[in-house]
Image (cartoon, rainbow, N blue to C red; front, side):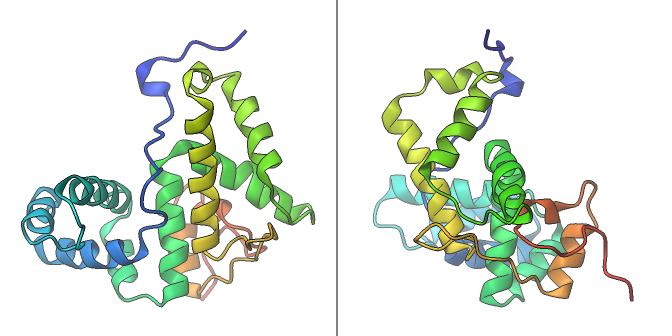
Length: 208
């Protein structure tokens, strides 16, 4: 019997627009580091149309989503983000998505990283479907979504994996080559957020 979930236990599933939001994150994080207030950042981004959206509704949606993901990074991580290479930014924004969305984080740890470590480094839609079906036993809200929404969640997740450089278009899992500074920033957390990435690197901070 499926578990009945309280509102606070329900998965957030609003990650179907914008992909990894790499460009948007670079713009918004820079404003935050100047203002240090997310409410002010939102106002500036909307009034200045900083993300160059074609419509007001799409602008509001993307700004909200970008801020929600960036707000799970701490200030040192945001400073690293705006000073990062493209690869570093990809890794940080993938981890931000994993922190913001528990469903993505669990898929990253239980499927992506697990398959990589077990030397079965491929992903396909069937892996997502089996993962999703397993989670629905404990999260009854997943049974309530339409098949079209489920397909969109899957498409968005795989799009983020591709944009992060963690999975090829053909479904091959690509090792995350983390820079030392990104690795140490992620490993400093408890539990270590290195767990969200396909890598054999240790989960603790690198020795100096």
